[in-house]
Image 1 (cartoon, rainbow, N blue to C red):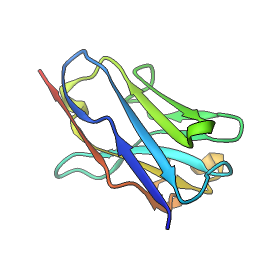
Image 2 (cartoon, one colour; image 1 turned 30 degrees about the horizontal axis):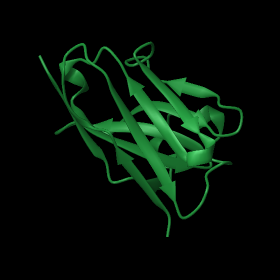
Image 3 (cartoon, helix red, strand yellow; image 1 turned 45 degrees about the vertical axis):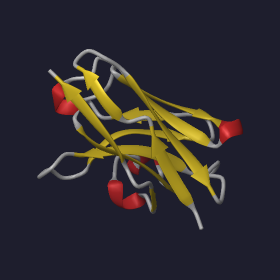
Length: 125
């Protein structure tokens, strides 16, 4: 069984920071692309960032570019999403995902076939 487990969510004031973690259990994802998505109530799931284990290439949505940073720790089989200058509109459930995703499709949700359970982020104004 493969598990992706997110952690690090919580309540933060606008302008604050959080770092989300996504730990992989059951296998390694060194040939995969790791993605970060979020979903707010009543909205579709939204791509935020993606990172390739091999090479470390990163991809970001325009809405978070310059505020969010994806990174990885190979030894811990864990990826991170550093979120700075958070805004109330960043309030959502955040998910990590993994898949054998070509670079061209790094932002496309349907290419990811492993998903975590999500972690809640709330940003107060």
